[in-house]
Length: 319
Image 1: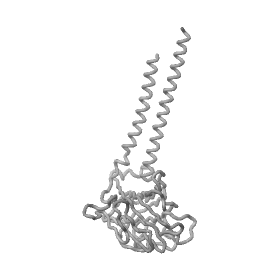
Image 2: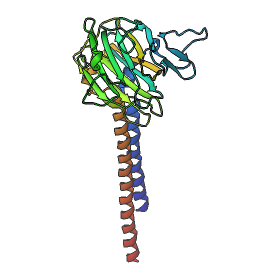
Image 3: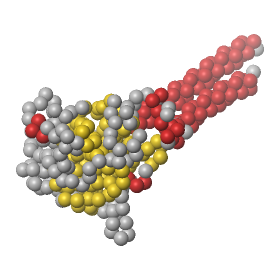
Image 4: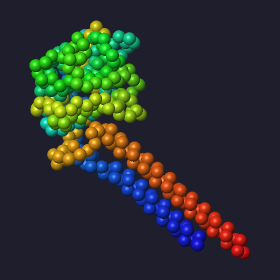
């Protein structure tokens, strides 16, 4: 009898562990990963330059400085500075996701600014008043604003997004109130480690902005702009600006992904959650699923052990 119970317990544990392993394998083979292609033409990482001291995929200008061991500093913590970093290739038309690592901060305790801009626009490398980029943009602008030009009912720093038509100016006097299509408060300044942003675009559907302020924190769903189509042949750009007050504005890395045309046909069937959060949710749910299955396995073993103890006790009374 003991041998039979042992075999049953072993079989139950094996089946549950097999189910747990299959759950983990399913995460690893998630279709989101297999359908995504990284665009090497937009990859930016240390040391940023090649053997000939050239930056292949981007142009930097203004006061931007390349530190091959740490970062690309768009502006130093000095007044009246302006710097930029622009891709030399245009982004895909239908779908893209840009992940970038950044850092903003300086010596200013109460007064600092002005901020950094993320752009996907037809024009490129034209310095101007919109966080170091030209005004009247034709495309997307996401602004990491650290200085309030007017009074607001939200805190600074904050992140906001606009889609320009090439004819409408940026409302700089009011921090983009007239242009704002989405925003969130986010204290990304003077943090201990680099922050991350993930910006996803699906033509005609949405633009979504997510933030991960510190490595151990979860992704924040900052805002989503729906029913939007950006101009074709748009470039990717990062710019920064300081005025009478200042900050360091750094780009540490950039990674761009697109999706296979076949996969895009079914993309709307996915939950309306950006890829970073979706992957994180899948991983967390799978983790807790494995833990739950292991608890069930332990319970099954415990139940079989109790049955075995009763069986041996009954046999002992017979003799």
